[in-house]
Length: 114
Image (cartoon, rainbow, N blue to C red):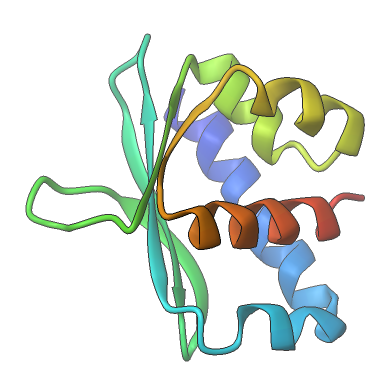
């Protein structure tokens, strides 16, 4: 599991970096997005910081501002970069966090689709 999701997170970060016009969307939005795959029990976090966006394994002591939880395949589909697949996967993944953070992540993932 880890390799597939890690590769997709790398791709999301790369696509975000390539789309310079998205800088204002992420500017000032310093958040940790926790990702939990229910069937494989893997935990990752996608972090948006002033320095940029990165991902790492999510440790118990780290607090997440927004949590995505679902089956591994649904999580992978969420980050795959295809807007139609994203829309379908979004219905299968549980998001817990403020409405603002959910909308912001939704905008980022939609705008970074291929």
